[in-house]
Length: 267
Length: 333
Image 1: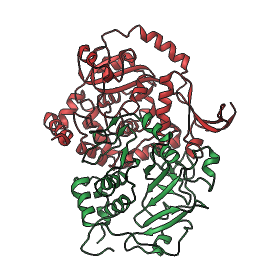
Image 2: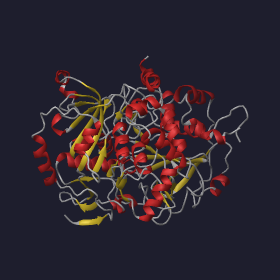
Image 3: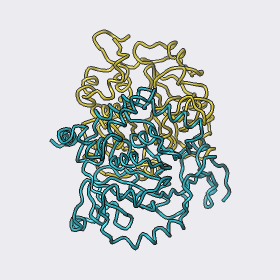
Image 4: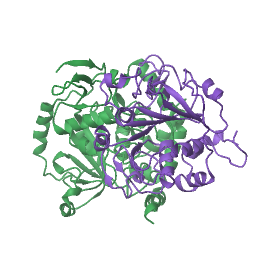
């Protein structure tokens, strides 16, 4: 798909693109996997002063290696504070946290996320998933929620099987009506096909840009609901040599997360 | 206070703040005891079949693995608090040792994915009704432990609202009696027993922890019985040198068990990194949905060994543990 001299896989692509959108000097919660990769890359490139908070209590660590868990010693190595889950979540509840960076199994047009179960009967699920984890807190409390997911019609659905984590719920004003803190909600969605934001009026998902080699038609055909498509859709830049080098040599030299993209390498 | 909406989830722990006060009154009499004992004695004295259990550490970090192996060998079953539970709850679920779970997060193994055989077993047991869930989130579980640690019956929080997680939880939404705004109340979670692995403790149970605390401060303060497993027992003089390091003070603790490497194969901050290779052996076994490979895993590593020391030997012993220490300390070199 991409040009032949720049081989990279979907995880490397998504992490590189997402890293460019992380704002320097803000407090961010990052989950395990691609969010942590993107955050670590951003700290080495455009956002050296991004402050990471991990839900088990690590605040602003200075480890060079990628944490393999939201709790491992890389989340507290040379940290400014070894705090606790209540403290981390309360930072969020008090409005200190600008960004939360999450994944999910399903998402709907309003950015509501499911990570609890697939199926129609809660007590008899087709697939049981891990549950909320910290996602409900992050999606409820962070000012801006960033979401990263694989893109398919099974995942981008009109109605999620279970709302684990609130997006804009049923549309404009939905969050406030439910009692969630005002002024919060999903901000951007990153996939291997494109980037999405949410229309200010309708709170529905809107295509913002596509990834290299991806057409708007492809995005539409892989999405199970009506997307808002603007007149012009820019294309994201491919990962640079430097981004790939940092990801491979410094951020995840063991390829613990990166290798998950190896079976769909783009050549 | 008017209840505007409530979840349909069942509350699995029914201990009230007054029940807990009585338990604390009794415990206060034992606070100055020398609580050192071995794991088998601690389990015999302080853990009962059917107890509501909370476990310290988080995900694949600082889990009391020696305790988990021993209670699995002994066949005990629990009801369980599960904010960010991964490898620990997977082992319990694979062996049908957990009956009711307050879920923050279960089944995952971080970057190793979700163990398929475990997930299928959960689905089947859920369908049969012999496994019961109540949905929460990591934050609300932490706050439920915190409310109990405060000795109050509930805490108001600003999450869960508007979601199916709320619907399947035991939370209630009310109008704040002061401002009239909507707020979610989560009930305090008093546990029967909490087991926490720490870096250092003295014989009375004053504990120091390095690295993240997750909700261990709260768990230790809200369980009727607390078992501490520790990498090392240290003198009380060491504790007294810097009381600000005492994360858990002695009056909450019932047993202090010295178990070096007691968190293996999970990460013990500053001492040893998680053993990705061993966790991968488990994750690979769990890919076999027939359950056969997992059965072999358990025979090999839990049922077929007499204690945790033998398990450590099986996993590479001193040589491997030194490697993990090297990985843990890499950042410092």
